[in-house]
Image (cartoon, rainbow, N blue to C red; front, side, top):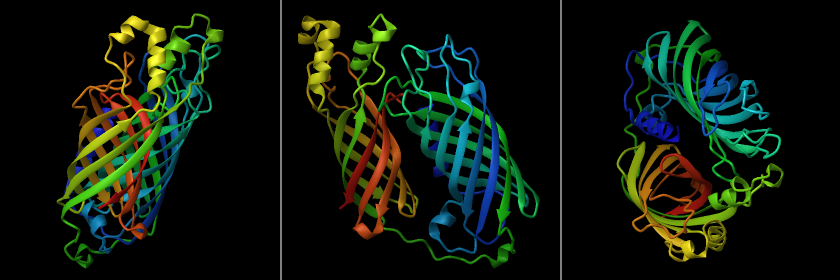
Length: 401
C-alpha cells in the first residue's frame, strides 16, 4: 500500500494540465462532511470481518483564478485545508478475544481538479497527518491486534473524486481513497493497516461567486532559481529492532511472559545531495547518504541469543556505519516540498543475522524551507525498505548551500 500511495502521488503531482472549461471565482472557503464505507485488508492475521465505516469533517481554502500566484496557477488552483477523521475499526471482528478500537486522525489535505465542466469537477486528493489509536497490542488480552501497537501513528491517504455543484453554494461528491496507518516502527508490532474506502460528501462553499473567464488576470511568467542546488541534511529517528521482537515475544511460549513494550533505539543519517531545479514545481537529483546505527551491540547480543555464537562468528559481521546512494525528487508548493527518495546500499550493511534493512530503501515526507532562516529547512519523512516495511519516522534539519 505504501508503494501504491507513493507512486500515485508522484504521477498525480506531475500532471501539468487540466481538461475542460474552467470556473472562475474569488477566493473561497469550503466546509464539508464525508462518509465512507471501508475494507481493511488482512496482514499476517486473517480477520473474521473486514468492513467498517469512517466519517470526516474538513475545511478547505481555494485561491481565486484572479490570483496571480504562480504556484496556485501551476497546480490548477488547488484546495488545501485541514480535516479530522474517525475510522470505526471497532466494527471489525478480530480472531480470538482480540479487538480493534476506533482510530482518530487529524490531517492536512491537498485536492486538485483535473477535469472541470460548469458544475462538475473531478480530480485527486492527498492526505497526511497524525492519528491516535486508543486500543493497542497486548500479548495476553489482545494478542492478534498486531497491525499497529502504538497510541500515536501516521495517517496517509490518496484518492480520487467527482463533485457536482447542485446549488450556487452546495456540492455533493463521490470519492474513493486508499488509506494507510503505521507508526513507522517506533513501536512493535507494526505490520500496518491498509484499507480502501468509498463514500459520499456534502460541501458548503463560502464566497463561491463566479466571474467570466475573460476577466481572469494574466500573471507574469513565474520565476524561480533554475539550476543546481546543494543540500546538507542531518536526520534522526527511533527504531524498534526485529531481534528484540523475536527474543522477547515471538519465541516466548507463555503469553504472560511476553513483552509488549520495546525499547526504541536512535538511528541517524547525514546526507549530501545535488538537485537540479528545472521547473517551478519540481527538481530532481542524487544524494549520498551515511547511516549510523548506535545500537549495533544490541543487535549482536540478540543474534548470539537467537542463533548461537558459531552462526554469529561466521555471519556478515557488525558495523554501526553504512552508506547509500539515492535518487531524489521534490515537488514544491511555495515554501513546502514533498520529498521522495529511492536508494540502494552499494555495500550490504553489516547488521548481523537479524538484518533490519534490505539492499534498497525509500523515503517519503515533507520539507519546509524557512524564508527567515536563510535557506535552512526542517522535515519529516518515513524511511522504508523493499517498499513495504517501515524502518523509522525520521526528523531532519538542513541547509541549502
